[in-house]
Picture 1 (cartoon, one colour):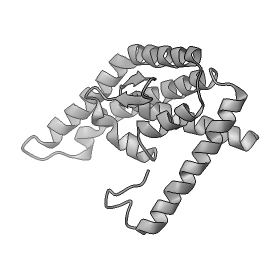
Picture 2 (cartoon, helix red, strand yellow):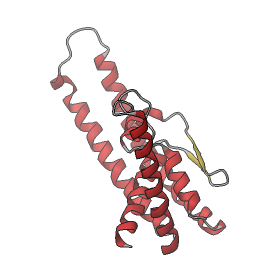
Picture 3 (cartoon, one colour):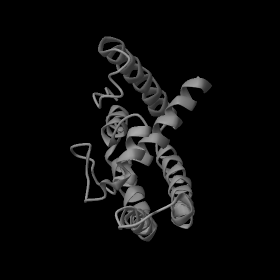
Picture 4 (cartoon, one colour):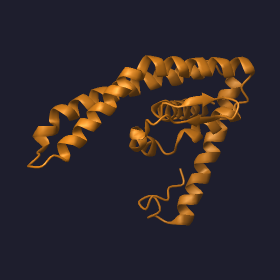
Length: 179
C-alpha cells in the first residue's frame, strides 16, 4: 500500500507539474486542460512523460465528488494566480536567450550563463510550487481515491511500456512517444 501511495503522489506531482506549467484553465466537467499560449514549457512536459491529459485522466479516475472538484479548481486557480509573475519571468528569460542566440556575431556559453542561472532559479521555484500544489490536491483525496490513482497510474505505465515495445527503441527519438 505504501508503494502504491508513493506512485500516486508521484503521478499527482508530475501531473500538477504538467497541468500547471501549461497554465491551463481546468475544466473539471470535461476533465481537460486548455492551454493559454504558455507552451514554452513543452520540454518540461515531454520530460515528465506525458501531457496534462495524463494527470487529468488520473484525476478523473478518482471519481471526485462535486465538492472535491470545486476544491481542486480552487487550488489550481490559486496556484496560477500566485505563480503568474514567475511564469512570465521564466518565459522572458527564455526569450532573452533566444534573442541572444539569434543576434549576429559570436555568442558564447559565458554570454548566456547569467540568463541560464536566472532560468534555473525560476525553474526551481516553479518545481517547488508545483510539488506543493500536488500535495494540496492529494490532501483533497480520500485514501481510497489515492489507491485508485496508483492503480490507474500503474496500468497506464504498463500500456506505455507496451507501446514502446511495439514501436521499437527509436520511437521516443522520432517524436512518436506514447506517453
